[in-house]
Image 1 (cartoon, rainbow, N blue to C red):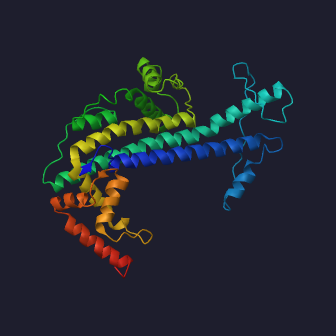
Image 2 (image 1 turned 60 degrees about the horizontal axis):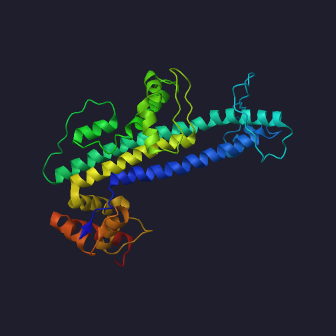
Length: 339
């Protein structure tokens, strides 16, 4: 028996792994930039960015001129933050000036990280949507059927995906205002040099967005509002919400993929992945084809296997197991002459 209750599919897994990797990268990059900013704000280090650039790569021996931004003359509207951790604090005024410079530097440099995270999230989404269509087409072709899809005029990629396959959006509607917010941010970055579009300004102030954030993240802060043509800034921490929301939507998409392909489709997917030439390497030798398949079915796709031959039986019923086992044996002989 094969239990699909906790199963995941390749498109969902690919986005999930992207999300986890992005989470780590954003935190590493942000903490690294914070370290650089604090180093450059230390007295005597103001102009040492060039030295850091030169040390990073031997070919960068003539780096561009770089300096952290200076606070504006009118400081009345900026936050007054103090830090008890700085030992060289002389008075509140100097600490205030330090925090002003740090805030400005963070806003300038952190935005590059946020841009990368938001762009990456939507690029990964595009890849996964293509992946879904590819698997559905492959499965339909295998079964000598057609992957029937409906036309959708929606400009929202998620809505278009659901409409084309006739999926119910009830479970994800609560996420869509946040998704549309980040989609508008992404488009403003790409097409308006990070200046807010009319659409972003409208969405950012909408009641739907406010309610979506309050419902899904009751302890979180409201997302930033933007006026038309205003420079966009979103912190790296907030930028991760973009990928998180898309991942939550993909949890629902994953259920529909499983529903459409069923256990036979998941085993078909597993065989395609388990016995691809690129998946064989000397560092991971699995002698039995059955074990290789079970490793993908249970280890990668989280299908609960009750009986070690169950997955093979399904592959046999599909008529693909003999070719898979033969392919596995041929590749194993290349890796292990004793096989």
